[in-house]
Image (cartoon, rainbow over all chains, first blue to last red; front, side):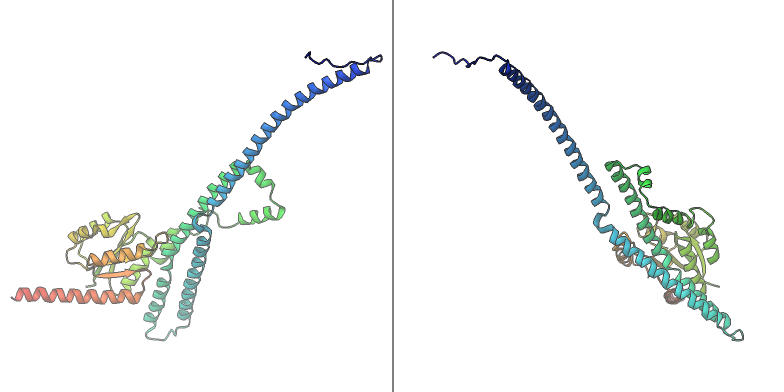
Length: 198
Length: 140
């Protein structure tokens, strides 16, 4: 059997020939587009994979921000500090009020004053465990700071972007906080506090 | 003559508070912040009571009780300890270790003047008993 030859009809105006050319061009174009889309698809796939990896890494960083429920523990520590401080303050103020109310003519005056002052000293003993609690919270805050920096690096947030994202109210709140006690500033230092007790 | 107490405590504020309590109980208090300073004081003068904090920096004083006893034979030892926020069992562990080491007095923090007064009373009784025993031994 002889190979089939395409049937050709007379084409006086060359329409068929032009159509054939057009189809050939189209076929070439489709071939080119196919390889373009193939490349584009591969690149998109890599981009999406990179995004997915970033999200996974960010999730890991966020979950590491609160290891073993550290946030809730820190909250409990702060509550305990507040309670201990309040209790000590009340004891000291009550003792001071008692001293102020003592009768200057009382022959036992010196002893009574010493008793009340001793209550003030006892109340100050909360400082030991409170110091430990504060150190623990400071350590946690340092860990969080490091994690947030890692997270910012993962998602590509620079400090300038973070600052630009603050609302006017947030910037004002931040500035107000800066007016708090300064580190190594004019606040009473530990040596002066010790001297008061000496 | 007033009794002498040596207080080993690395927190200056705590040391001042504790020494005030002992002074109120009639003692003369000497405060030191580390072991070498404590041993120097023990070599320099006689004390009637040693009050030692367990956790000095990262060191455990209970591991050195023999050294303190060598420098101050027969002097009663009071061990004071606070719980550690990072290690809730540390306080109980230290107190049990101190009891096993047969220290005379345990003072878990925070303690108060009444606790110090009771320890001072027991220290007076201890030295009275020791002096009576010595006198009896001499008489024999």
